[in-house]
Length: 155
Image (cartoon, rainbow, N blue to C red; front, side):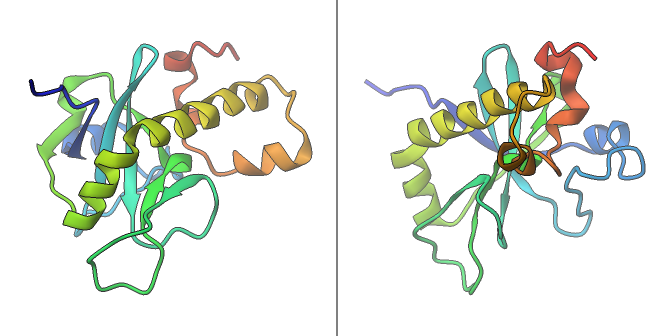
């Protein structure tokens, strides 16, 4: 019996980038020439799009251990640049990733989702003003600040 995948890989649509433009939402990753592939997962009542990046230099992510891509940088899934895409029109074309990363993603998806849930949970603490200085650093450049309504965080 084939099990249902708990994630999908896509690009975000032009409609998403029109709504969340770089002048009003500077923390959202946006490359027109080479758009980011995003990992779509469901957490609570929201669909999150987590960008896959080729040069992650912080710890708010899942770093791939294996990749066939010719790069000297660290590739991974960036939690700090996650966006909420509950509108189907925000989700663009399906995408494919490097085979070794795909195998690792399939093997580690439950761990990745759990680690991201912990990141989001920590953001609630931060948004409530209850984070210590170290915890607050994790959320300095997060995109979650643009999605308080979807997260049920009152201002």
